[in-house]
Length: 105
Image 1: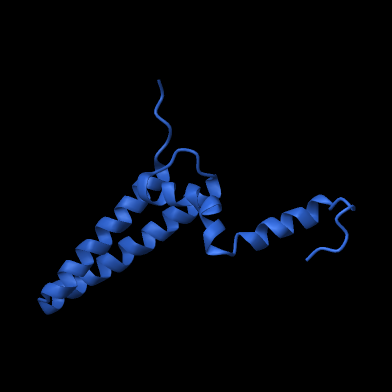
Image 2: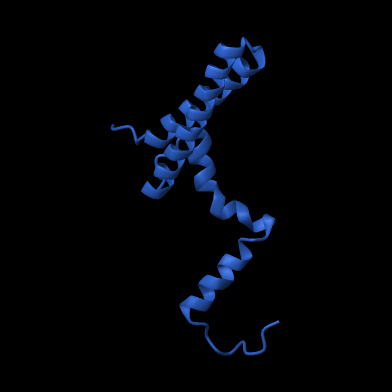
């Protein structure tokens, strides 16, 4: 509860309250919608930081997938092969979404 409702909050306090509200799951969707669009559909309005982070994340998935494919080749393991292919495809999708740009008209 706020005691002093007649005093205007400085911008820093308002920003802190907005950040605290984003912790609640019911209000979190507002701040995550942009990143979810980038992650699954390749949103063109994402920041450079989000794109670089998604690209690094995708490269890690491809690296793990390639390692699993190498293990599948050495051990003749079908499980390693399937999981490795899934990881490589998912990583490739993330990398493609990280470099997607707006289409020019």
